[in-house]
Image (cartoon, rainbow, N blue to C red; front, side, top):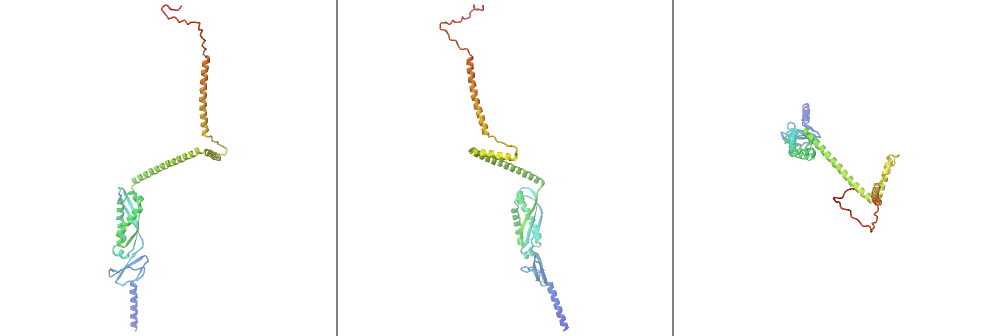
Length: 299
């Protein structure tokens, strides 16, 4: 009897040990791939407690979290023959644990190598302006190039981003001069446009004031109010320019009239000083003067 009890206890202990040896815990961020005698079982084990057959099953855990993989700096020449250094980062995760465990030996390393080659390829196909300004399109193209082989490994590329583009110092100086010249050009254009618009508005204002003289009077009164507000001890009364022009025209006209009258008076005075011609007596005959001859001389 005692021997039977001991045997039952031993069997129970061995059973517990076997169950304990075949029990595995899969974390929430992992999925389990079971190999039975070296052959992968279909599907994967979900998070929680799972049991394996001792000495027959072997489980490999695959992390399904998003992996952040930095791409080392890659040096290349762009399509417009500019030498640049570009580094990027890849965000990916495992969508099929069975493929990730079978199809590729190390999916993280494989994705990194594909990302490096794809980044070099995208540098050679792009211009420098695209690398600096049109990065969203490059991100999409780079993600598509990496995702094509990674899809067969059970890996999905979430996002690829270019972190930094390193340029030669000489090119940086050239670009800074170009940007400065462009800003100066824009400033000049904006200033000229502002002057043009101001001239148009002034021309419109002058036409309106010429059609309505009352507007000029209101403008004069507004100017007086503004000056009086700044300096209360000084009062400025603007003088219309049209009045000065009226005085100028009147002075010129008066000068022409005075000049004509003076000339007329001077002519009359000259005629009065000249002796009047005496009337000739018809009875007195005119004797012609003797012609000069050889015997004519002074007495």
